Image (tube, rainbow, N blue to C red; front, side, top):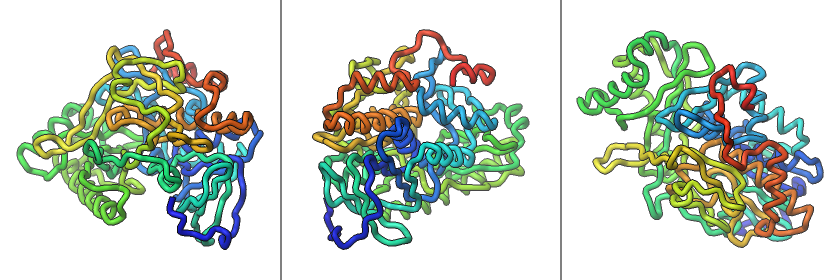
Length: 456
């Protein structure tokens, strides 16, 4: 806890029952779940001028809704369904086939998703404040005093319960909860600047071989040193806009996203690589000869920084055992997808699949900091080892964490009990009641576009 502020001299912005820090997919889901019963006041703050976090800053596909394999099953529901349904109403989604066998993805229009989150948050009566950053935590316990900054200056927010959805575990770090820093024990996952290109002739691209052709072209470019690509693999997929594609191709390794000077260098390197890829696509890939980059991600994509030590820590062994524990609050069938530096120096991605393409359960203790009374953490700062985190960081799972934490915070206030003393059976029943999936479905999910309405 920094305690660099004399909070008695800082004006009070407001008091709230539940404060959510970060309006990414996990934080938005947490706030919506907490506000659902309209019993307690809920507030969400976000440092950017729009909600969605990774889902709107750099990506356009939700993963984690479906298990991989030939007979995919839908393993996430509740508030994640509400979000997808809202996008579906205006035709702003389509289902993408398995990418590298990771499970069917839900492609969406990220700009429309910003509006969907806005509308859901406002309709729920949540106190919604953008352009606001947490800078210190001066007291925790029965009341949490948070110091925030925005263009109006410094303010304090007093909250009875806090859900840390900041991605970097900012609240937990400032409040003194123990965290593991990515890179301390295993190499941290690489960072990625995504980019979008317009005027792509997708028919020509597919006729030339599509993904398999692109993979071979990238391999050849690296082997022949024709283009200085940072990796031999990557994806370029169709968007919810005609003749446009989105990529996950850039890989920037060796920088900490918790240090501004290193993050600055990473941002510069990410942009440099993006235009190396643009030249490669235009010169080497059929259908791209007249295409150009029309946008880069709002910031470089960060996969991991701090991971809080929770009442339970998800491990690789938990994932590979495909076990659903009695205190599970969500399911995950995604493989370990570890974007890391290969042994020969080139950036590669390590994959390991849950045996049988089934699922594992994620225990409640993974979203509760060790010895926490009033705090939860959701999203990529949840309690997991490096390998387990590389599996359970998909947005269907982070939204599921968020809705569990939001309901748990309400339960904690209702029962006047600590975060680490919630009666999980009650929480599970509430999750079930809003449509969360807590048991592996027997029936296979129809992941064709025509079957969408039955699934969501």
